[in-house]
Image 1 (cartoon, rainbow, N blue to C red):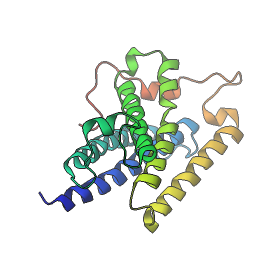
Image 2: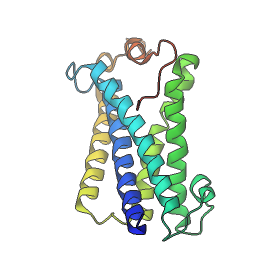
Image 3: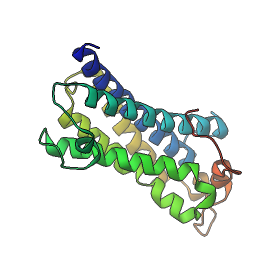
Amino acid sequence: MNNEVWWYIARSSGLIAWAAALASLLLGMALSTHALGRRPRRPWLLDLHRYLGGLSIAFVGLHLVALVADNFVHFGVTDLLIPFATSYRTTAVAWGVLAFWLLAVVELSSLVMHRLPRKAWYGIHLTSYVVAVAATMHGLYAGTDTTNPLYRWVGLAALGLTGFFTIYRVLAPVESRGRNSTGTKTRDYAAHLQVQGPQPPDWL
């Protein structure tokens, strides 16, 4: 296969993985804050949230394969799995490695959430914010499409929506966020997310 083809696959798959991860994060925030009201329905949002998380993993895998196959930079497997192992834009690539491992942990924890304590699963899931930041930093400093207007607008839109959901979580009435008067989480969101027995990966 022409070497340029692998380069374009690496670029496009990286961008799709980044966009899917951001969209999954935003849907998760919409679910947890109830900011969108009763419509669209929460089960539908949850399914889409999980699908996008699995989709991001699939495209990250394609991104890594394409980078190894591409001969322009000569990435090895070690360069892509261990932070600071490569000499090419070392810090920028390290952001991507961090995002990959955290994303993998978040997805794996979701598949086995019925076996994890709720607090442990929730703590792991919060690292999705770090995934979003790390993936964006990786794209900004390692990618070649940062001058693309579409990339900038998607990034700005994601930043704006993240700010909106965060502010809503802080300022909205406690009841509208699914909490009772003592500040304890209700079981509504947990009930939607609870996995009954082993489940196949989200992207199947």
